[in-house]
Every structure is written in C-alpha cells, then in structure tokens.
Image (cartoon, rainbow, N blue to C red; front, side, top):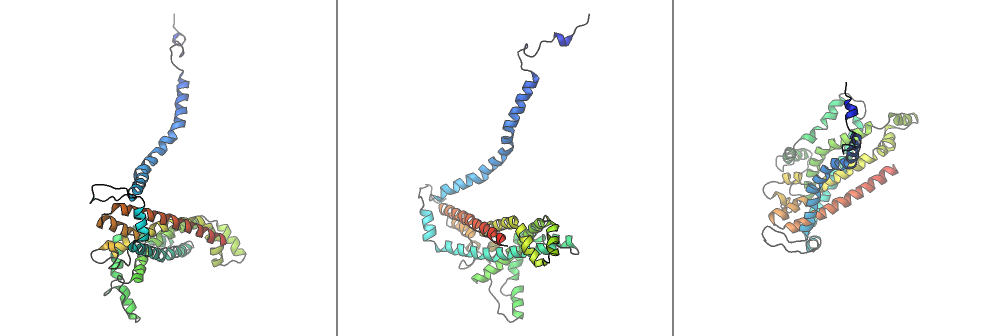
Length: 324
C-alpha cells in the first residue's frame, strides 16, 4: 500500500505558519517601501558629515570669540560681522582684489572657450588631436602652472618683460603693481580652464540638431548669424552652468595668487596686499592671528557673496540668451 506524502502533510495554516506566498508578498512590500531610503542614505550621511556639520559649526563659531590662545569661549553675537563690514579695510581690499581677478579671468575665459568650441565643432584636419590638446592644461598641476607663469612674469628676466622691451615698453614689476598682478594671475587661471569650458561647450554643441543649421543656411544665414541665433540660445543651460561654476571657483581663488607670491608671507598677497584674495585673508586671520571666530565670519560672508554672484550671473545669462 503506497502513502501519499503530499496528502498526509498538514497545510500551512494547520502548522501554525503563514503561506509561503504571503511571506514573499510581505517581504516585497517592505523592500519596495524602505529600500529607496537605504539607497539614498549614504548620500545624506556623507552630506551631513562633510557639508551640513561644517556649515553649522562655522555659523556657531562665527558667533563666538573662539581662539586656540583662549581656553574659554565667549558668545559675541554679531560683533564679528559688524567689525568685518564696518571696521576692516584689509577685508574690503581682499574683496576688491578677488572681484577684479574674477572679472579679468571669467569673462575672457568663457568667451575664448565659446570661440574654441565653435571652431572645433567644424570639420578640421587632426580634429581629435586639437580636442585632446586643449584638455592638456586641465591635468597640469597648479603648482607647475604657477611656477612657469611666475618665471614668465619675472621682473628682470621674464619672457613677458623681454617681449615688451623689444617694442619699447619699460619692464613691469608684475608682483608690485596691483593691476599688473591681477592680469598675470588671471592669465594663469584662463590658460588652465579655457580648455575645460571649451570641452563642455563642444559636448553641448554636438547635441544640437544639424537640420537647424542646414535650414538657416538655406535661408541665407551666415555662420556668424547661425552662431548667435542657433548656437547661443541652444547653449543657454550650459552657459549658465559654466558661469556658476566659474563664479564659485573665481571667488574662491587661492592657489594661483598664493604661489605667485615671491618670498615669504604668501598669505599677505604682496607687500601691500595688492593681490590678496578673500580665501587668502581667511587663512591669514585663522593661522596668523588665531581668530577662529572672526575667520568663521569671513567664511560666511564669502558664502553669501558666492550665492549672490551666482544668482546674478544666472539671471544675466538667461536675459542675454533670451534676447538673442
């Protein structure tokens, strides 16, 4: 006599357990409900540790007189901000220097990048070589770039002064003169980042439909007219992106002017602070004067300046591109 094992086995509910398909359904429901939060959790943990906490700590320290020279910490409220804005000419000198170099570097940088990208977007011989060549400055060390440009702009034996001398112009002390130092540092920044922005513009140009250019050419539009009427409006999101990124980088300018300094006292930005930027001044306050609370106030004001200028550039770029 044979035994039917399946018939003899008690059902799931008789054994006191839930059916297997119900357990799978519950697990799937929990997975769909909570797994998205687990996937994004690492980002929020990293953001909290490396962004939210430093910002909160900076806000707190800016409201105190925190210093490694004092064991006690006193709450001073907005005194650091009041002193910074109303009674600190060195800070405003750094602001003027930063904005001066920002304008001299950002405007030519983005304009040259647009011109280069437009040229590389056409059919050229050795096109791949030229596209790779403009990317070379990006991978070059900032220290090496600063060293080379410091030699080019040397007062006595610099190549730039030698070229000026051949046309009858007196040598320029690029480190002692305020506007000359701005120009020298700005060319350093432009040389390094023009190719980077050109590649971004080139990638955006590649996505523009060729039919639009063909239709414009049939209507008699010149290449210049096509550039202003088709290319620029289509690049509006990309131009806004590069403007914001360049604004953030330009107002945080630090390495190039620091390495451009000759001799000791690099954070001072020259003998009279002629090319000291806000970030250089911030580190000078923190590391040389040991006023950490005051440095926190400088950092927050810099953050507000970057946010303000990014907003202005965004609105300006939208207005210009819409007019075109």
